[in-house]
Length: 437
Image 1 (tube, rainbow, N blue to C red):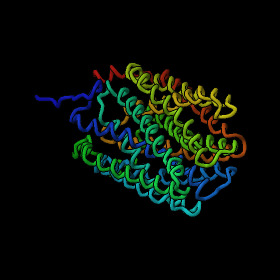
Image 2 (image 1 turned 90 degrees about the vertical axis):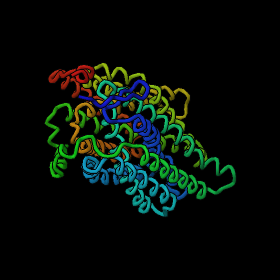
Image 3 (image 1 turned 120 degrees about the vertical axis):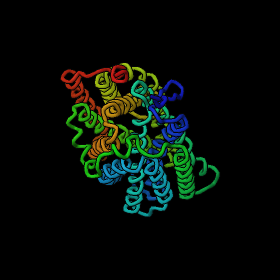
Image 4 (image 1 turned 120 degrees about the horizontal axis):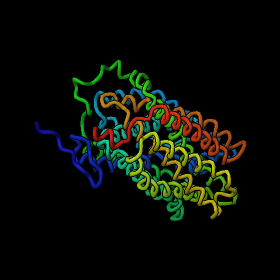
């Protein structure tokens, strides 16, 4: 009997029926997806200061509120999006995500009030659901089990590289355009239109190159009704439940960094007397430092995740995340050179929590219900963002810009302890043993 061959791209062995062109297209998508999403914080900081002239003392609360409404939308849409991916395939949902992000970025600089900004942010939120849900599901579909950690680490590396490259380029455009004589409004408008165009281009590439359909044969797919509940029923597996808990804080990690790190740098720069465009640039730099650290760390820890029991890997990853976030308590001025070390630790911690959570859910999610289970995984992530950023925005304004990061560090420590319990109570197998069986 002929078996479907396992193709490879570099050191990564692909799952049966996944062709190299599908894998390379996925790697392009991994590079652009998170970078396109995270630009919103840099662009938003510019719009709040340049377009809407919001006082810096109110920007933490407004940013937290915008994230709150984003997460309300994601909570509503993640399960339907996951069911849709299990029913019609990953590719059309992924394409729709890029189209929605493009629309949101084209509308963002046209905002004349915080209310309008909130409406456009909700369109952006629908795009987030489609892009992040499809990215996580395809990342689970494409590798063989023995290469899962390596592909997730490479995804983290490419995502970090995309964040750095895209945010460095597009985040610096308003400053470049202002230096060439454009006014503040036009600089922001043209920047957002350019990144919207790039989102459309990315959707085209994904549409051409990704694999169509779903991993499960049509006869093996669960009924539509059961897909809506499979994310909950699968939580009877303690490792899936643990991965949901990890998603709560791991997605919150990413949102805290994306929302409050550029804002901290921007408000600190304005307090030092910098113009808004220059302050946004300073805020972008400390954000990029953390992402560069994540970029370099991901390929170092990925091979270890493939060798370890996946719950053991989660214990290590959550421990690193806790250290990274809590270390920010030692920072005085974020623009001091001595602060760079703490932003490096922050980036290492953030990518570690992402890799640990994604590796565990990727191993445990059933093939036929993968989109739905990852949809529930993302719902827990959305809940984490909702809770952490809502509280964090108010703490940012009333207590300290460091407060949201300290809260996240403490939650990471709690998830680490839960992972220790699961590891001792349900030891399971190492990744290499699962793949061999």
